[in-house]
Length: 170
Image 1 (cartoon, rainbow, N blue to C red):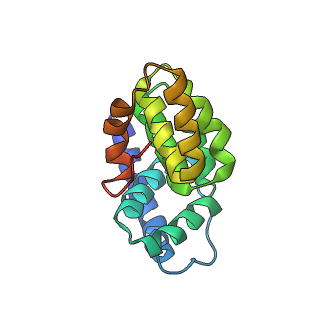
Image 2 (cartoon, rainbow, N blue to C red; image 1 turned 45 degrees about the vertical axis):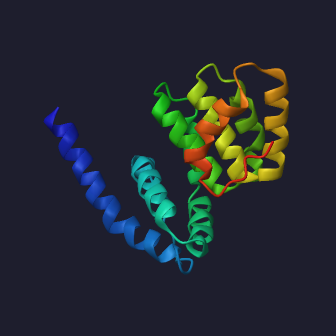
Image 3 (cartoon, one colour; image 1 turned 120 degrees about the vertical axis):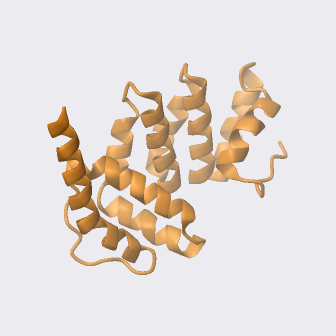
């Protein structure tokens, strides 16, 4: 067991030496010669990228999203959707939303019917990140056809995801 923690610490140290400077640079300009992201670093990358993305100004978010896409983080995030741990599924959904990749739309829409309500609400939040207009249409359909998606209930779950400035007039 101790070997596992030693290896994990070593991986985190190696990750930070390679990727932290590249992530910081991606906020302002795209780094050149981006190495391939090894699978053992994917979870570290996702966590570090998300923390940086959420704290970055809007101008830096675009560069961070492009950078993450260039290292195929969307594939790792999509892989998290089948994880047995609900927190990992929700993290994967959030990453896909923040990357604003329209190709993830069918995956996220499919998760709206997930039996785990937190997963369904997270996917709705991700849809709003990807394309607000289309997400509103999906939400209208949900509100019309499902008692579990009551407007006030949805609003209270989406508020932390979308923020206070979001217009909830539906």
